[in-house]
Image 1: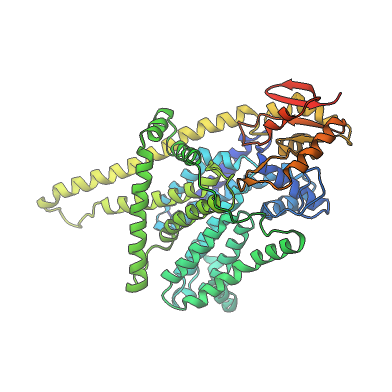
Image 2: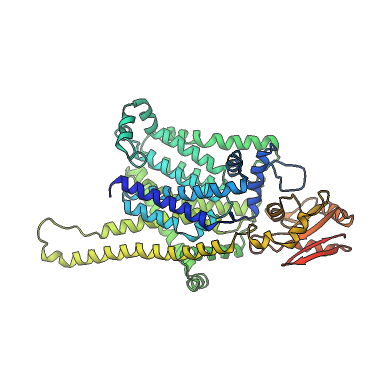
Length: 564
């Protein structure tokens, strides 16, 4: 297959992925607790209030807990007259299409095989978990896009580090002869584009933007810093400087802004919080769900301990391979495949960053699919590389003349092995497509995920809250639910323990007394929602401490207290 048909097919697959997400979300994207921050932040920007917590009924405070790039993107779409919630669907459709095409491009560059690139694009575009993540207002789709783009630019920088390659155009991004000819006619622009330092500058800029999407992008930055030091044969520190010149300014600008308008750079403090066993079990179950669509097999992997053993074994093999490749690259000047090496390095970097964040910064983070999604994508890339190398090694080499009798059985074995590897490609895609079809049907039929579902949009308690006078405050265990469904700001129920740090909350007694006074005076109501199907909510036990409140409404597992 020539390059033009390959790119045409990759574009068609990308467009198909975008169409599928459009088809799966007729009622809009799903909504979670974090969605309120991103949508509210975008609406606040459009209203001229800065990046503020408009979903909370209190004095406006600058948001630092959530990085700003997704809200900025939604606000940018909002300038066209589209509400940020609707704009998020437009953005995610484009991102699902772009991510499918990007990972297919990475697969081709990694293996030099167009078939491998198409396989990887299909594997990404037909993955049920990734479809669900793109079907919600979350930061992960944008984070994945920036991450994949940074891997692409890094691979270009690595491959163009020699003087000879600096005068050639990169075929993955410049497939057309006329474009190559026009750039050759402009040597100054061509040299700027193709210098490794400039590609590393762009890589750094992309990782800086990724940090402004999710703080866990620190793992991405660390990955590239280590990879530049190990893989580049010369000018290592110069090239690290170029990379940091791209990465540091966006991050520095965000921290400077936070220091000027808030007390904390990221609204997180260092405090050791051991990771709970229940959280680990959640992560293992989600990994089992990612690996196989069959519930019985998921349960066996989870309950038998086979999944844990498999992950440990694969992790040790991958770590040993990384150490070996790093040694060969740094000491023997034998460079590994840059995409395979950096992806494997990123697996450990990202997992380490998440574990560190959970242990020292944010104890409320759970091993949900969205948190694990960068690992899923990395595993797909490494799986494709492994299968391709196995298939290549098993491909029989045919002589020009008649075969020797001694080679007959070897050729039969090679053909059998090659057929087995090709069959593995088909089986993996078939399993992915099976799970994908189920997820697509479910998304289409349930009419919305999370707070966007009919259950929340038709909830009686929320309908009452929506009709309350503006001067009546709402205390609740889920302000995101109130804001996303009714558009109304509400107040968080004070809790004795901060769920992020798991430490006692200062000023708890005073906050509780203030809420009690507001409720008993009839100036506020108390709404408690069952959010167990979405995310954890805190403060349900508070209602037991108030005598004199009337149960105004109880339905669908939700209650509303107040003074008639």
